[in-house]
Image 1 (cartoon, helix red, strand yellow):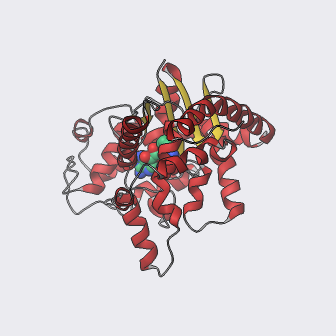
Image 2 (image 1 turned 120 degrees about the horizontal axis):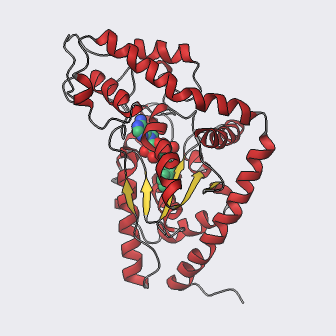
Image 3 (image 1 turned 90 degrees about the vertical axis):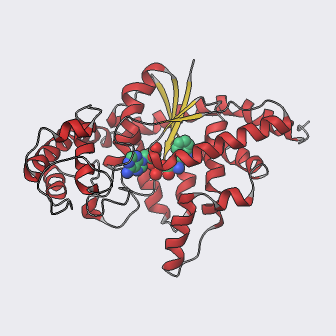
Length: 333
Ligand code: TYM
């Protein structure tokens, strides 16, 4: 059976980008057809300046939201990364497989480290090695497919390279995974800055739709989305990024594959924005309602995470033990 692994980092409230780029497929496709594991990857949240209480709160919130979105513990494994030691164990072996140059080439590292330095801050070493930990997340589970948005594809490519290199050098140990992405919605852009990704850790609140935003907040954010001074509605990602983003979101909400087709149904930006706003509100409504129910039952969520970690550990431990032996580490007595 196909094995799927993916994760979400508790560095901020989950966004429409996370949902359309990743989570919706986890719910509607991946858990239905494969042996799927989904993780709240909390160790990754420590790679940038963080508040411990906030990371803890966001981790539980992410788990609750993923269940509210429809992940079903009877069909998939949902767990918190730090509950399973194998991620950190394997990460070190992969640090001994990757090169310094490879890490420094990662686009996300260059962007995030650059921003941090511009602010006069310091960059944690773990931000540089983060893609190795992500590779460990994936390789520990003999993963075939990694459903992610566009921004993570480079990290999955690196994971493939590391798996191939490790296998060649130390004998076949890891499955070589591949990234999968949605037909549309793989890169939802910030509504205020449509040339930047809608990212949950960004500061620009008005450009980000959070999954738990009230309907009126969603409407306001969409209606104020930055577009351009044109009048006709055409899909052109390079020349008219704001408009293209709205068309993509609407296409993704309705399950349509082609934003250019969606554009043909509109004569004005106003009408398009109104439809986008309503489509997003309706998309998120069941999720918000279910989230409100689940928040009232934290013991249920904790139980799901406990069982999930047990299942995850049972899969990862023999794989990581095998990697230890392959690399030449002496087995304990
Ligand atoms: P994270 O937490 O930033 O995002 C979680 C998932 O949401 C996707 N995504 C988006 N898709 C479309 N448009 C957007 N604006 C948008 N923003 C985020 C991401 O591509 C991702 O699929 N490094 C990962 C977490 C991770 C992981 C893993 C993923 C750690 N280990 C192993 C897969 C496998 C991250 O920071 O995702």
